[in-house]
Amino acid sequence: MEAWLMQTQSLCIVMLMIAGIVVRRKRQLHVKIMSLAMIWDVLLILQIELSRSAILKASKAVSNPMMLNIHVAIAVTTVVLYGFMVYTGRALLSGQSQIRSKHRILGYSTFLMRVLTFITSFWAVLPKE
Image 1 (cartoon, one colour):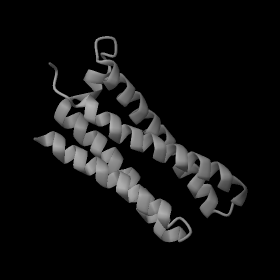
Image 2 (image 1 turned 90 degrees about the vertical axis):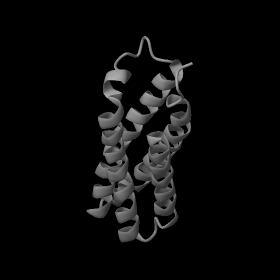
Image 3 (image 1 turned 135 degrees about the horizontal axis):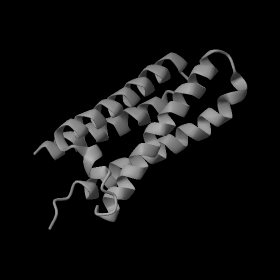
Image 4 (image 1 turned 120 degrees about the vertical axis):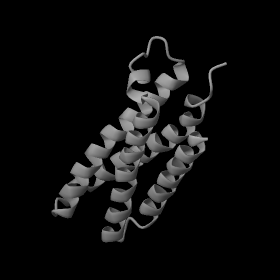
């Protein structure tokens, strides 16, 4: 039953990111929405860890199903990209406009990874047969 709650939160995070992309020209709103999405995502990861011991399971990569390993790799990549997004976003806010194209490319890459995290999560949470 808890899986549906986490999947719903994951979908809401993706929808929030879409909203943030849509309002990207309204800088203050964009920053607030994207910050909320990233913080919520990290909190969701903590929630998953506390309820499922996700790190322990992920550390057993050799015995895990391949889809779980793919999901974990994409999820970790997403969180690493969040760090780059915060860095380039703060640089943009401080007036370093030359970093805008890098921020845009990283942003769409981060969004793609987050969508793939959402998609692969459906296979990663399937019960073992």
